[in-house]
Structures are given as structure tokens and as C-alpha cells.
Length: 282
Image (cartoon, rainbow, N blue to C red; front, side, top):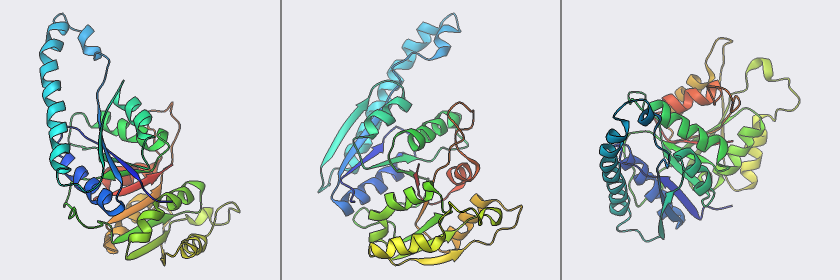
């Protein structure tokens, strides 16, 4: 498996620069088509109907929306100006959560921004990212605000893979293989809780290392020491920091689409607090 098409979500936020830098670096490394996705809500916001002057305020809001779209497109054009790979631009229909599902299936890998906890729209952004992870059917690379990679080099020399023996972690390992093949250091972190280690359906971490070896990837094994009260997500992020990882790979675990919180505890912790890019698969 290789990566032939990458889709990056583009908006007018300050974090888009980091997203685009990672997207351009990856597209260059794989000679993949880079698709910029602009997603807009086709529906009028609910507040239009809650205030007497809602319609008038909506009309005043529309020019700002148009300016944001122009800013997003300009950012994408500037980032890909010197690209040696193919580029494409898509404008999704419907709500952003609909667009990332529909349009995202054109790509092998989706790139989105990490929700900003200090932003007033953080819950909307978080729901967007959760939907991408759980419903797009594609691996999702979440980029935090941080140091920018060199656009001409592969940005993930050191990769940490979280392994707990489940279907989700096996899926993430499989989806990350093209990236792992290009890394110079791969660490498989065993994060199976002590109370779950006797479950017959869970694959031991050696299986992950053996599978990678058959694909030409040498991986080191790291054992996570877990106390009963320890937070697995926080422990995983700590190990990634200790190993100086450039990328974290982990399976995503959902709690059900009808619940307020879509993602499971470990996944949610990593999504909220990771300071390095994280590849999620579900």
C-alpha cells in the first residue's frame, strides 16, 4: 500500500500554515496528489431565527465568510506554488462534517488541525475532527500548532506506534505502513492494561513487530509500565516525548455516535493534548 492522494482541510485559521506545511512535505515525499478541501455549511445558522434582526445580521456575516474563503484558497495556493506534485481544490457541499466524509473518500490520507481548546468554536472543531476520524473510512493525521517541517523532506523520522492488541491498533499499524517504511526509528509501545492481558482475542506486541519486519520495518519494543490508576493516554504522550517522536500512531476508539462524547478516553486525551502530529485510524 502507498499514498497516492492526500486531502488537507483548509480554512482561514492561524493553524492552517502548520497543516499545509505537513501536507506539502508528505505529498512531496510520496509524489502524491494534494487536495485542498474547503468546507462550508450550506445551512443558515440557528441564531438567524432566534433574533428579530437575524436575517440582517446574516447578510452582514456573509461578506466575512467570503473573505475567509478567499484567505483559505490563497493560503493553499501559496503553499503549493512550487509543488512538483499534482494539486487539486475541492469545495465540499453541506455541513463541514458531511464534506469531510464525502470528499475525504477521494484520498488515502486526511489531514486536519487539532481543535484549539482556547477557541470559542473549539467544540465545533472537535466534532469535525471526531467525525473525520470515526466516519470517513480513512486514516486521519491531526496536526497541532507547532514547529513547521522542511517542505522538501519527510517530516517523521521517529515514529511511536501505540499497540494494545485490538482491531483498532492493528488497523492503525496497517494504515501507517507507508509512513513507517520511510522512518529511521520506529518504536512499538505496548499499552495493554494489566487487567486485559489475559484476554485471548488481544494480540501481543510481538505480533506488531513481526508484521512490520515482514514488510521491511525494524521496530523496537517499549513496555508501558501502568499503575492501576494511570492514564494510558497521558502515559503514551509521555513516552512519545521521551523517545523524541515526530509522529504518534494509534487506533481510535468510539463510544457511539448518539453520545455527547464521541471518542473514547485514551483517544480523546491524545487528541486534546498531543504536541506532535498524531495519525488516528478507526
